[in-house]
Length: 260
Image (cartoon, rainbow, N blue to C red; front, top):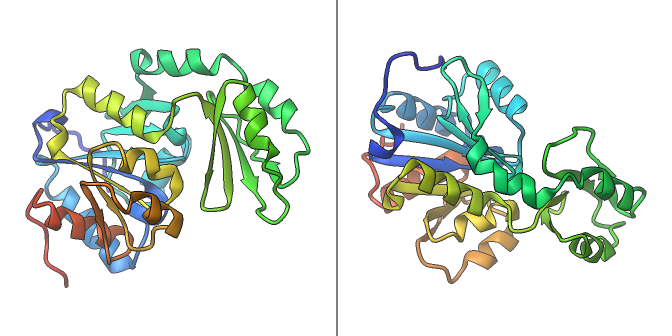
């Protein structure tokens, strides 16, 4: 899908702002449900704003939108919340410096020290990409030594395990939820118009942030359990994209297309 070149209303003026995780959520479910969601968003961009809230980095998001014919977001909360950025008309993703200053200060250029500390740690394999304000590992549950968690905490940093596959080291207090909240405040968006969507534990801080939320039907059980007693959370039956549409209807946030 092409970038929008004609002017749109400011995102704060739109009826619905969808702030969604990618893998398993916006990119999850049956192909016909994904296409139904994507076509509906594209045909209603004057009333629907789109924010990707993901563990993916900006380069991946640009390639994904260009190559997989996806709707382009207006904003990105990426790198598990350590990037807060605007999508420019040419498709470039530009960090919003005033919103990232606190993230950078909390990180304090600790990447090299983290990598050295966890080098060879049982069950963790360093991912090859060098991120600005986080260090990420692939996790092997059977071999993993939980002592990594105490070691990270002793450095004044946070750790996050999601999908029993990933181990992220993050600045203290920084994750998807706080960074999305910071962006919403910056854009002066009415939070009653926002729907957050996710499927794994790295979405917990976003779905539990007090915004309207949906845990899509294919969510990992640990996430669903943590959200069980929270208000404003819809536990969808449908998977992925169809679960997002289900929640929009349940919260009466927008008129939605009926199933084919």
